[in-house]
Length: 191
Image (tube, rainbow, N blue to C red):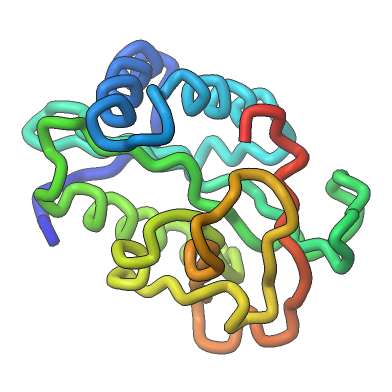
């Protein structure tokens, strides 16, 4: 993992560069998105009650913006069909999404460094855990485990290739011990 990647809170001045980074990252790095839906999701997150500006980061390397990672409130509902509001369920959890690395920096440790620093900031902010959906080969290396190991399950949203793609990480040992339920994506139209 790189130790020269620096993360900082995103600012409005970064938005145009973030759009370019995401479009190129997803067009060149995925077979499931051209990035336009990710941009729409970010805009939706920023306008929602689930947005945490202090945990929305850009990564810089040698003064260049090379990544973005957003941690937002993720409610763990007691039932599969939660009333999508802030009034029910466990709210002391964040979800990491979306994450993007500039295409010129793929496979160079930028993503790992950026997310690891973000996890530390989430821990320092007092959240109990982090959920993420993605490539378990990557996220397992930085401490995430299959969410079902914590009795947390997905209900709707992006179809996963397999159950191991939904993951969680405790911010401290035992933080998720008494939490169980379902992650609902229906709060986001663009998820």
